[in-house]
Length: 391
Image (tube, rainbow, N blue to C red):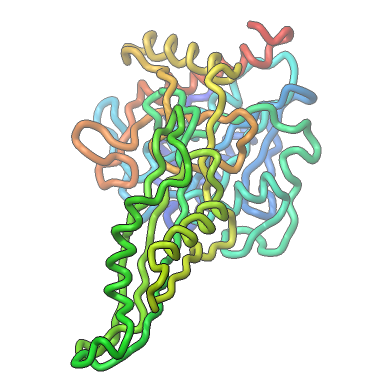
């Protein structure tokens, strides 16, 4: 009997995995064991299971953690509501179903589910590097067998996120950092005797609009740079000696975090050239690399197979036309798996016509979409891992 992804999802959404993921992880482990597999939890807290051997190697990935606060499970007809319904327990249920039910004739199929995508992504980092970074739910300082250690190097990844059953081949990255402007404190009654860091910061805010160090990407368009916070001054009657501006960067390929840092600092220093105020820019410290932008060739085999399967499954389920090939609307752990061909796919939506869905109080997923996603991933997998690779 085939696996029921909806029954699994109903149990998973009931579990509060905002602070700890042990409950949902046990549900996942139990489902794998009941199907005759021997899953393991590595030192980074990832759940891992494999089928088959040799090449090609296809990896399913998603996460079991959710953002706070927990929203209780509720089922209204054919709609499941609650925290994690679409981000990402709905995609998890679909990928798990495909992993268990797909008939593979060659190669390796791996399920690798991470514990902390919503925070530091130490699980995904460990899957690719074998290193467990501090700050996550795993054993800090321990080593992990990377995905390529015992099995062949992964040939493609399917990352479960709410895409509305579209196949997302690219996503912007997200960098964060702080611009620091240093001046000289003075009495506000004698402003010329000091160097006003807040005034200099105001000029730099305008300079952010002219920062342009990377061309528009054919799939993702332009990168964005947004000031998200500002702080400066210690006394209302003093020329401020320091001001800090926090910025959010949504990057596009081929920009890297360090490349962005260097380019922005150079740009800002040129804006204050000849002035007494000084400026520096540093990226926010974190234990794992920033989620950088990625883009998969839309002609890759994984893209075509999954798009065709998504169109067929959604039409059969009465969901209309799905399976569009497009970018994903948020940063994701998928960036850790690139440059291997990587697609983001799953039931549910980041937002709908009424507003936010994922991370919102009204988070939901449609039952038909969960089943269609499971069917689509299963069918695409069977095509890719057929005996001749052409099914």
